[in-house]
Length: 304
Image 1 (cartoon, one colour):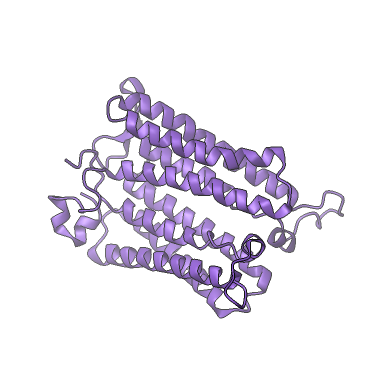
Image 2 (cartoon, helix red, strand yellow):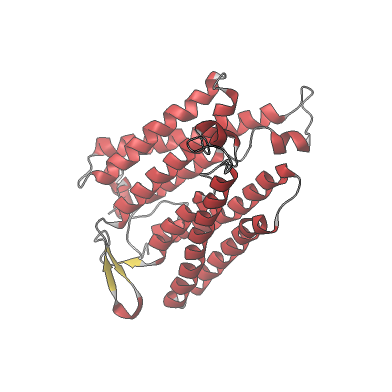
């Protein structure tokens, strides 16, 4: 039984109409594929700012859509050969983690002054204006939750993953709680990225405090629900409301960023969208809110 069924008992007998027969893990893998597509696009737009994309910067740009397509192919293969699909998805998602960690390393290197005196080679000011250190780690986070979704938990909510040749891996938490912890980490990463971006304007616009407060609250709420063994209706209601709030914050933020990038006459200038407020960035809040809601669905593999 998923956490949503605690507040909506009818979900114990029938799935949500828009989900149909898709299981929670299948939805998580679908979200991983979509996220990889947009990560490739977002990386391309971010690297265009420099005017020249270096050879190694093409790695995440090309990897994102290719990995997304491979995950979709793995989903189709899973209809007949689940084990083969799991191995394909595992290779893709492990690669995603490697791309994310390497990207974060390269961004840290770009944000340091190797010739400066000790103690001055890296600072908060440098990290604010340097390439975003946290952004590449999103690839690693997608790999982490995708790997959790790829392998079946049997019995449901037991924390025991069924691997190859009948091998079993016992996790310290159930998949539901693990998903909630990962969502909390994702919200925290999104929050820190937002803070570093908005720090360039010294938080002069009061609108930028809304994602900050919402991100802090959502990080605590999801981590708190994951830490609870037997959540109450109030716990689940608070989490659902918080995830819906995150989605609203993300959508409103995207609209505000687009309005900021438009000229005074409402004209679209490509350069302003590239170097102005990143219009895709606020949607990360909406993305994490959607993942938080999916994590609350039933852990049963067969929704039949």
